[in-house]
Image (cartoon, rainbow, N blue to C red; front, side, top):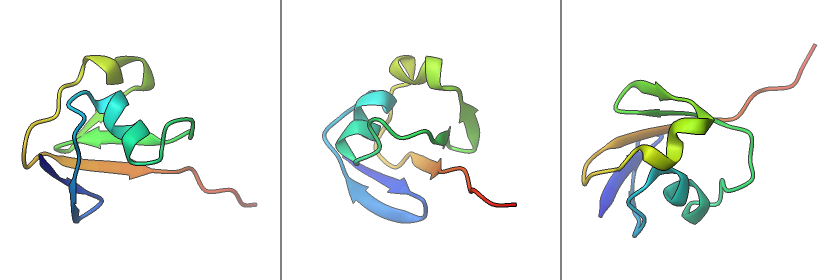
Length: 65
């Protein structure tokens, strides 16, 4: 299926958000996620099913002073 990852179309096989993150290379990363504009906490990712055309935003925290 095709999703929009951070504004770019991507083809993925996974349906659950946690599996999609692993497929996209974010498996062990500490990131914030939103699906179609709604924040998804880490603990809820396994229960979120993605659909064709969904918008997924993945943001990594910035380090700095």
